[in-house]
Length: 178
View: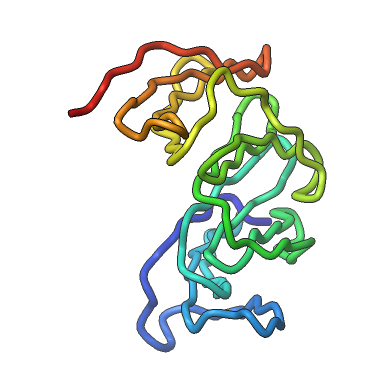
C-alpha cells in the first residue's frame, strides 16, 4: 500500500525499482514524469509516466493518486499500487485535492472542475467571471486560493477563493496591471 508519493527528477539508473506507465498514442511526447512512491513497509519505487510533470495529488480518503502530465491524467489505486485509469491531457494545468472530501480539483486555463469518483466524472464549477490563465495558489481553511486573469482583459487580475463545501467561487479582489 502506497503511503506517500512525490514528483522527482529522473533518478540514477538502479536507484529504484521502476514501473513504466505508458499509454500508446500517436500524440505521445518524448518527455517523462518520475514519481517516487513509498509503501507502508517504507520500501521505495519509482513510477514513470508519459509526459512532462505538471502535478500530483494523493487522496488518502479515497485511496487514489492522480498524476498530471502534459500527456495524460493518470489515476492510481494506493492500496494496490496499480494504474486504474487514465485520460489523455492536452489542456489541464492545475491539480489539487480537498483533504476533507477526498475530491480532486483540476483546471485548464478557462474552467475549474471537481473530480468526484474518477477522472471521467467531473463537475464544472460555475465561475463568477470568464477566467483565463488559472493558477491554484494555496489552501486555507478548506478554501482553495486561486489567481487568474479576466478572459477578455488580461491586464485585469483576479484573486478568487473556491469554497469546497459550497462548491462556489468567490471574488476576493482584483487589480488592473499596467
